Length: 478
Figure (cartoon, rainbow, N blue to C red):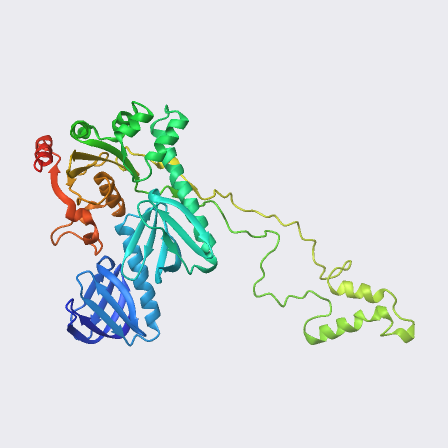
């Protein structure tokens, strides 16, 4: 909790309120508690941007256009900015259903400072005002040159990450590794579903069925005539089999799979190392280790005795010969029959626990069961010559209550099914947030930016009238 001066500015750029308040970041929200007014609680999902337009001035812009300006934070300004930006990043990862734990880098894109987060399935680039999600399924190659990391993106301009410093190579290597691992998971998942498919055919199918990408049934059956029917039979709920058959009859069907849960497992089994032959003696640093005693007197006596063998002390009396060395050796506690001789220490017994390294549990990738880790879905495109096409989105292995139909904008220069597929992937296939309506539904600031909300042409409940309603919706615009 920090004290600050605040000002609330409306979307029309007018002053609403100002004064002194306590500010804090807690439980996934930014909290403003004015000294003489009601507390304002803003979840991170409702924060559009966090910026510092002037030195020592923090501006938090909300999804509805209102803004909060803070000044007079003192030394807590840096901490507040860091907490707000971390909170926004976590909210962005949740909104886009990023899989796994993030590796975080700082850099710039086009001159703007960004936070780069690398997950199992995607790359998130977070600026002060927006979030860009780049699925690894749409990444072509990653190159690094002159401290610049270039990410090639299918269907778009390459993304150039700069000002990474010495971490440029680290980021490029991590992205390359995550790309390879994502493709390996797809191949392992399909191999578990179709153990009878030949290796070369499996490799081709894996290239088409990249994570989150729907492959046309015609292309899959070109690899093997039974490939699409086998996938649909395994991944589709029994009560939805007839619906998919009807959808395949009325549209050009495509099948896709999207990993929704990380299968990365952390290293386990390691224990701290310790030497069993050495007994700790904290608080006993003054234990006698010499027959000369403690303190300055013992040091002086040891020094005098060590010179006896060199003829210095007692040299005029015939010297002590090698006795000086002997007495010095005894001073270290190594003499024979000494009253404080130290026992011989046993050999150190070094014991460590067995370590299971970090790995991926590929067997956990499944599209069946009560809690599948892979989402199976279908996209059906009804094509009309010279007219905008409708695209049907259907979930195959989860009890989704609705079938959604989209009508993408005409003249986009791309296949409507591909356009809808890309938007679904950008939204992390979390359509509840994109199509949220009413006060009881949560909708983040980026939901309105998705064209899916604008493209929605209709919703068909999964009931006995499903086929009739779908047919009416598909034929309404003919």
